[in-house]
Length: 145
Length: 80
Image 1 (cartoon, each protein chain N blue to C red):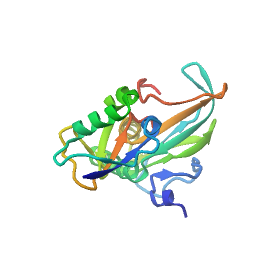
Image 2: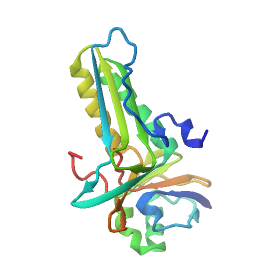
Image 3: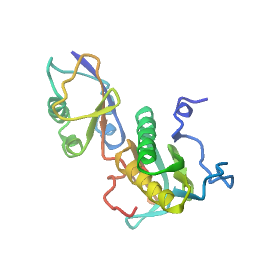
């Protein structure tokens, strides 16, 4: 087991969307968001990405964001896992799951969690381009990404 | 006194070998920003937009460093 595996919200292993939902009888709505590595950014063709994290701090911050979401909404399930290391196009970089009695809380909490994870948690993305060059992402300047 | 430094992402590229730095008693994060900028002037623009964490907690510019503090320099993050 690598050191990273000790941090449950930060993973060096591939992330998959499970067809198995959490077994919670009260749950009426379950939302999954997946952030996926795409082949184009700012008009440049991307071949792959590398994610780097300050793993112990990132893990703790995601844990705190999930706890804040549970305080704001009546959630029956909330989880977030972010990948680190080298990722290929179409691989999942981050997954956020939320479950609640009704859909509204699950949708709202999910958006809240991913927005805070993207803006606050110490995780960085390096893009590798088809021309062989590479660049660290400048951070979240586009709200819709 | 010595403090430990952790650099990440774009900041790491400016200070590839710097693991420890000597600061004075009473020096704050603001002083450290100035010391690092002086060490490598090319890092000024990225340091300006970076956050600092001491022992894994985000701190402000007036936070006073202590012997052995583990200071992480965190450029703007881009997870997701």
